[in-house]
Length: 169
View 1 (tube, rainbow, N blue to C red):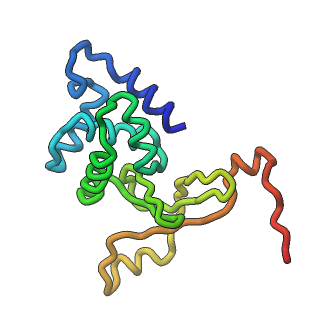
View 2 (cartoon, rainbow, N blue to C red):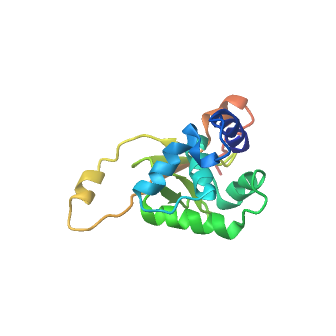
View 3 (cartoon, one colour):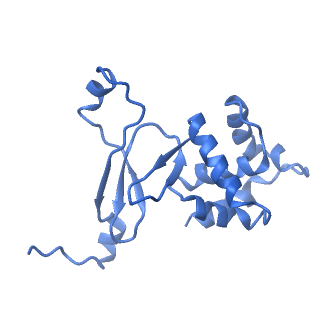
């Protein structure tokens, strides 16, 4: 799924008629984000932001590297990891660790919760309010991040009818 997104975006956004990929109208949004956050603009950073933004989902660094390396074979894993960490520090991306030590990245979209599907492994954004959030954010502690997630079965897997009902012991 994610691999198709970047392929389509790359084809659709490269219509400026110049040889400078960073001058492309579709990519100027990401150039501006980098500049506004005092981050040096490189084609790799622009592509990472583009992918995270257009995928509208959660992606791990390995998948991101694999996909972006198709158009830039010299792109190293180290560059991807370093850029993702820089983006995290600048507040451009958020990092989610739901299952084990895997780190999933997404464009910073504000506070929201997640559903991890036990069947397909996908992570979905869920917009629900937390009744305790206001008190925590304005209380005696300094809260930097709030993570809430649910585990279960997504609608796609339920609709496919491949999910076995949980049996009580």
